Length: 171
Image (tube, rainbow, N blue to C red; front, side, top):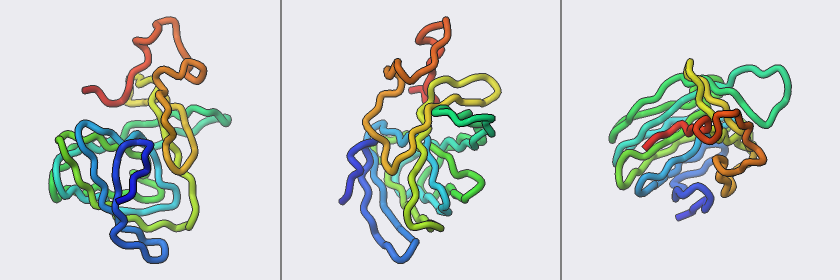
């Protein structure tokens, strides 16, 4: 069993052939996989055990380069065993997973158009009305151990203080 060791899930690669990969992912407790994308990939997520909430967003256009991204919330839905969620290159590509049960198993089937790509991780800084989320963007394969909510150097603040820094997920 492999673990990326950085965001808490364990994955077992069941099949790899060319650009097709099938992985079983296991999460325990109340673990989340933060908002991220899969550039140049298409796939299906199938819930095997437990319950999960999948949040899907799209990136809003930006006038200039910035370490922050504005995301538009497209959907948030709960899936149970047998439930499917799809990922395509253009739609439903940016997503987050939140477990709703003590143990969760997901079958992840992905086809990558390119052999080597880096993922974008979107760490929420502020959620506004109108279903928009301001996120700090980190580009790398795996998410480093970063607590974006306490990384004061990289979070834009407003006069309202810490109350303005809301995470996407509430427990």
